[in-house]
Amino acid sequence: MVFSSNQNFEGLISIDCGTDEDYTDRETGISYKTDKDFISTGKNEVVAPEYNLTTLYYGKMVNSLRIFPEGERNCYTLKPIQGKNQNYYVRAFFRYGNYDSKNQSQIKFDLYIGVNYWATVEETFQNKYWINYDIIHYSVTDTIYVCLVNTGFGVPFISGLDLLFMNDSSYRSMNGSLLRRVQADLGGEVSLGTIR
Image 1 (cartoon, one colour):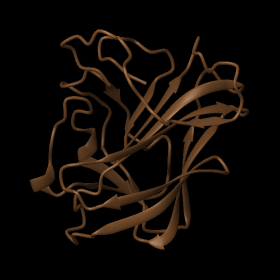
Image 2 (cartoon, one colour; image 1 turned 90 degrees about the vertical axis):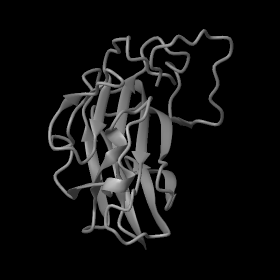
Image 3 (cartoon, helix red, strand yellow; image 1 turned 180 degrees about the horizontal axis):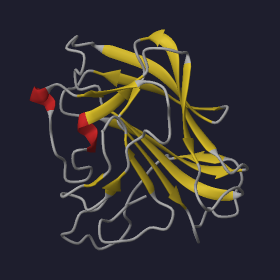
Image 4 (cartoon, one colour; image 1 turned 45 degrees about the vertical axis):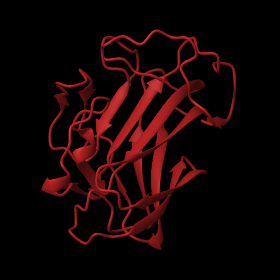
């Protein structure tokens, strides 16, 4: 799934987890919301100054994060305007960035969409990089929950969260969820503009 900065997607929610205010990123043109209206637990952090970076595809979104030192399960509440019985593309970003100055070598926790297991996030401390997980989810309710579950291997955290309504998609009539196996551009023309 590619998001382009020169397109206007109906139903796109882009959340910069851990940032203090909404903004439009100068590098990507993408409008980010803070996560304060989507979750009431956890606390905001930023990556260590020496690991600050701006990327072509994600701007500065990967420089902030929300951590969850308390509670076993912490959930984001997403309420897309299209409601239930629709397909949504959901993508979650994770970057440790040594925010706690502990140089932790490995953190591991689980990611759920609603009550269903999605993935195990395993973050090996790589200063310049981030990881992301994506899923195509058919929602049978008006609310979609994205949950981080503490499994006892470090404090769960998240850097960003995207939700995109998949109108007129080839997956429109499916039910259940699909995990990405391979993602490729087969014959598309890449412009000089930012793609995501």
